[in-house]
Image (tube, rainbow, N blue to C red):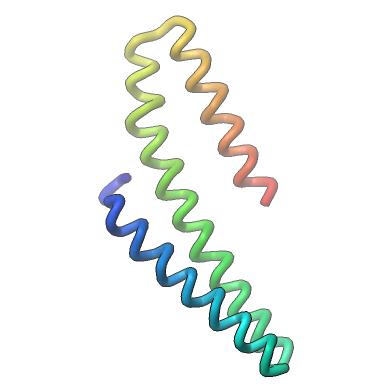
Length: 91
């Protein structure tokens, strides 16, 4: 994953889980809304970085291999990658 290993991703996701738990606690404690929104924004950016790392891995391995093979596999993987990118851009 462009230098990002599965272990790195799991570590990032565990940190994000901690961020989400922290946000829940902030809401429970009626913390100041802008502070909560800052934390939500940070968690969102962290998830986006994970998604981009996964997408990068998919393109650099799966899609590149399919392009080498050509034919229907190439077409399917390119459509799949395009759909994944569109999904990320919409969020």
